[in-house]
Image (tube, rainbow, N blue to C red; front, side, top):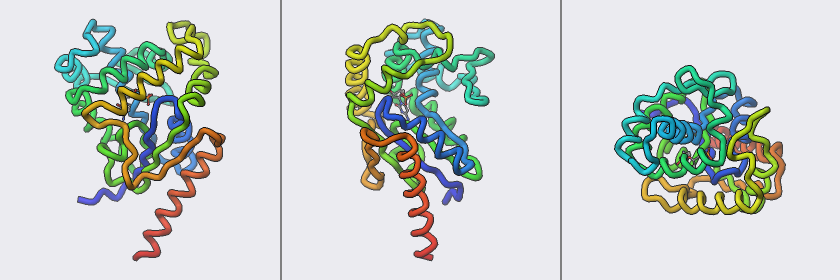
Length: 232
Ligand code: DC
């Protein structure tokens, strides 16, 4: 059955700026927003809290099915706990990339991700939004930037106000190294690796501002809508 609710899928590597761009595009269009990476981060954090190893695929799959996750006003809650900054630490970033290789975890999160598709539309960001979760997305963007540019952006980005945790001590070389490892793991895993599908439009933000990237996505979306009107 054709789902009439439009989706814009924005996939790309870590720290490419896709989250910021996706949120701004959603705001401009009045669409809902799904940060699918946050779900993998939450699984990694919840596993750590319950002493479940990030390579224990079966236990992680069971855990992922039962999570009580809430997104409210830009904040993330796990049960009653606010975990917005906790899930963004360098340690949990690595954990998210590790738990995401397991099909058990990906399957457990599939329906939850699809439940974000609500009128008037959805902007979803991640690694497999266009290739697996929303294959019928109206527009698919592959948003990337060179690994050096991404490391520099991550280095300059404060994790949160008054937050002290492991990620904050990281230096540029360490961040660059971690990003390279994550790129390899996310791009080479067997299940739903990060790939640019043939129907995705490439957006390299190495030399673009956030506003220019947002403008680009909105333009591409309008082109798709216009194309449909013309072909009817
Ligand atoms: O987008 P992010 O950096 O918050 O994602 C964190 C990790 O989650 C990333 O290293 C890989 C994984 N991920 C995934 O496998 N599939 C997605 N759709 C989103 C994220």
